[in-house]
Image (cartoon, rainbow, N blue to C red):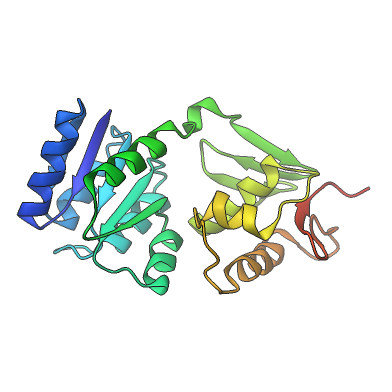
Length: 225
């Protein structure tokens, strides 16, 4: 695999890079956010390992910028900020996983390998459609009846998950794990808030509702009967 490590602590960077290279991976490195953004924007890396507290450009801003410009490489945040709110912020910014320092290298390696095993965008259908809602995964665009709809990166991921399971009920737990990679309950209304935003964005005057709440079960998206 070709990995990008964006870490300003020289000791941590050297330790992680050496360990990954010993496992046979190619590792590019950046010691600040701006250089990391430049390297990551090339789209050549299988996984990005990103510190949150970086000089020049912080990790959250870096990942938000990458997601907004269409970079889809999975991101593992590696940081000392380990609170629930910190994890939520990292995943909301477009991160795929979150590992808190100090850490065991074996766990970091396992998480990197798990992210790399996820299907790449090129292995998935390029277009998802439910009724007149059309999502182009390559162009990262969404339209309804030809009308363009702008979504934030996490909203796009949530809608993609729903559309991949069109006609089937998905639970809150499934969404937390599949969209936010939470394997615990963050005790927030993060799912409900994003569902509400999506409904507001994809529903226009006179248009039938596509996202439905199944009381006591979860949510589903389906074409009108």
